[in-house]
Length: 204
Ligand code: ATP
Image (cartoon, rainbow, N blue to C red; front, side, top):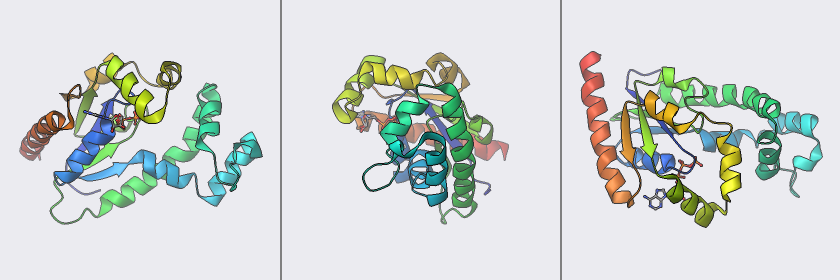
């Protein structure tokens, strides 16, 4: 692992973590998008075969690939199935993240972990600083309904697998509010990055 500061992103579902991640990328950070990595890992043959062995070929789409919405409905309905999936996928994501962070391009300012279950998975310990993306629930629900077609029930089902928001907020070093336009978020993100670089620079 390089000596660069590591920033973790936390927040409610649909709070804007990925948007913050892309803004940090534009500001010169190297981002590990754990969701994208998980999606890629689900296309791996060995992983696909393991999931079919657990849950049957009903989880495959017409092309024989994993249908993520079918997997989601299994794992968000039963905790033990979710844990089983996580114990398979998380170590694979971790290995890819370590490989990505091993050699950041020259000039990289910081490393960023964008993982939906950052704190729940114990990844907070790997971070020098955690940014909590705060976005009021009604705004999150409106965005998720408009963009992903998710109902409030769907969001609740997924939230049940996560820490309560207050606990995540308390674990954070910095809070950015995402209840306005992306430009206002970007200003806060830029300031938060400067703070991390100044503070981590001091301790290292
Ligand atoms: P998840 O918890 O599912 O990983 P997330 O926290 O990463 O979600 P995003 O994917 O960044 O959240 O944001 C959710 C949706 O809301 C996205 O479609 C994003 O483009 C939109 N969005 C986020 N912030 C804003 C904003 N300030 N203005 C308008 N749309 C926004």
